[in-house]
Amino acid sequence: MEPLWLCRDNFIRTSVRKVAGRADTAFRRVAWQDAQVLILLPPSEKKNATTKVTAAINVYTGVLYQALDWASLSAAARKRAASAVVIISAKYGAVRPDQLIESYKEKIDNKAMRGPVAQVLDAIKADLIVDCRSSTYKTVWHSPIDKTVEVRVSTVVDGVRTVVTHMSKKTRGEITRWLLQSRSVPKTPEDLYAIVSEKYPCALTPTDGHEPWILEVIAV
Figure 1: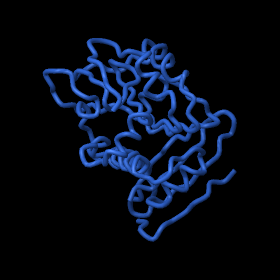
Figure 2: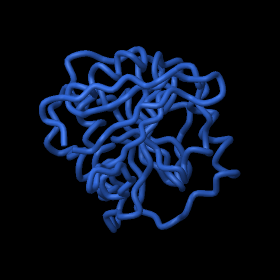
Figure 3: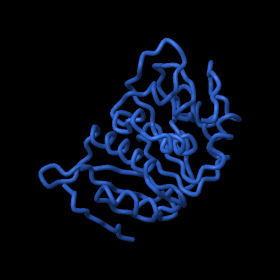
Figure 4: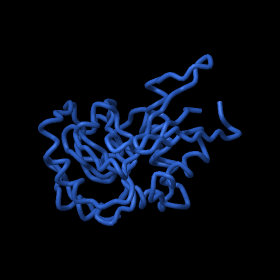
């Protein structure tokens, strides 16, 4: 099926426990068990060099997280994020934004991390999964394709659509922020398209039974 393009005028706390090693899977299941939507994020290579455990959202400081701008989110948006946002960490697996972790330099071992991540995420019965992960982290967990929307971002340069890494990260962070601030929570790919298309030109391509839904977004 051909994607549907929509161009807008502006086109072109639940408590946490200290983490000493791997994250506590039972604890995280409780945090996400009632999630209607899951937003999967990659970590960032750039991190705060903290000397003590810190909320994960304050450890990651890369482009995506700068665009998300956690500190300026409302209390309501942060509360939504606590049950919606999942950061796939190379060291800790699937973590919440407010989960306490240490700064680290490990690179993801996809094979070793698949089990721990699947143990957490397979148990979550969200209506919709918004996949904003980078390619490095996509193979750690394969989400159900019928309710997963992979967000792909491109930038128009001299009239040609191309992938610009910086803009892709920035836009994924902005989209995450937009979803957390939205008055409604998307429950279907079509709901997600409706919300994101208020801010970005985008196209939604349905799953073909082998790959997830695709939301192609033009960075603005």
